[in-house]
Amino acid sequence: MEIVVAAAALVPGLAVGSFLNVVAARVPLKRSVARPGSACPSCEQPIAWYDNIPLVSYAVLRGRCRSCGVRIGLRYPAVELATGVLAAACVLAFGVSAYALLAAFFCAALVAVAATDVEHRIVPNRIVLPAAALVLVGRTALDPSVEWALAALAAGAFLLLAALAHPAGMGMGDVKLALLLGAMLGGTVAVALMLGMLAALLPGIVLLARHGAAARKLKIPFAPFLALGAVIALFAGDRLLGAYLSLF
Ligand SMILES: [Zn+2]
Image 1 (cartoon, rainbow, N blue to C red):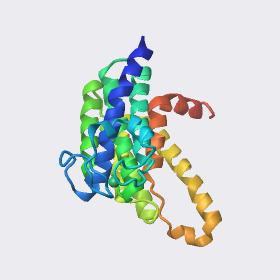
Image 2: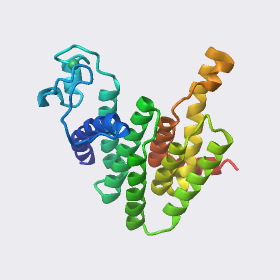
Image 3: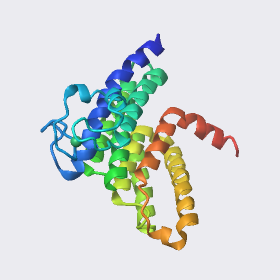
């Protein structure tokens, strides 16, 4: 039964993903996400509804604009797929519940932030702050405790210290993203931060091997790694924390 509902959640998830592509493209430029409708960034031809169907249109058009043939980034179907799959996973893991809805919203916010950071190298206040506030209110309403607010502040403070110690590696955007993570994850935000930092080490090492000392100047967007850590912590944070603590 749950699998049927989860599959049903995939479709609105894909549609939300499609909207997040618009958000990621426009919000950093301070453009409206409502108007005008989607247009090709190259030839500015408006995109018809039948060319704007999540995943399907990208496959049918083989990743090219119908009118000018310019290549459409893989980011578009990737964001749609990630949002759809995460929405389905939330229903599968947490059942049909208000918590699943909040978790799906949290995942959608993470996808939007990660996509924006990859494309524009910023974590926009206009996405991350309202999302953090909404998640904090939702989480506290569903499970009244100061844990969520405290975890948000602790995670933000931790990344603030990291950003001050190593300004090239992290930005204030990542600090605000940590607020969002803490508000949703509570104590398991520690798992998210740890996994995010570990995951971010890998491309850092690759870049260092390739470019030597010059790699220190290359900026790797950190938000996608934090988002990845947060998703893993959302679904498996308690188990991972338990396994880790049982080592001692
Ligand atoms: Zn075009």
